Structure formats: structure tokens, C-alpha cells
Length: 82
Image (tube, rainbow, N blue to C red; front, side, top):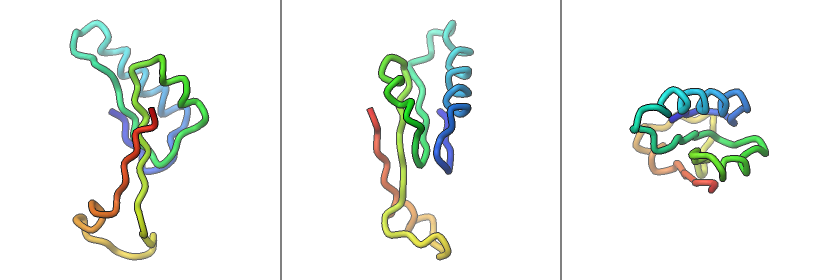
């Protein structure tokens, strides 16, 4: 699993692929997740891989305001893209 607090870059996706490659010979790999605020247009290539891109954002949030962890949990939206 790779988690970014920004839009994913191609290098982030390549990093996840590298992690997954390290586990290929162990019968433990089911797939990988990459969670980010957005993705480059490459997400259609994930359909043929064992990678699930997941986008997140926050509803009705002001970046300059302070929130408790519980408030952030109430505001987060997680959207699988495939």
C-alpha cells in the first residue's frame, strides 16, 4: 500500500510496482493499493494490473482551519477509481 497526501505522480506508481515485484515470488501478494488526492491519466493502465487506485478528499473543509481527528474522519471521502 502506498499513501500520498497529494496527487500521485508516475514515480509513486512505479514505486508501488517495485514493492509488489519484491513480493511476487512469495505467495502472499494479492495486489496493491495506492491512495492519493488524485492521479495522472495513467489510471486506465491499472485495469490490467493488481493495483487499485483510491482517491480521497475532504468535504467542506477549510485548509487554514484546525480540526480534530474525529472531525476529519467524518469529512473524508474515499473513492475507488476502478
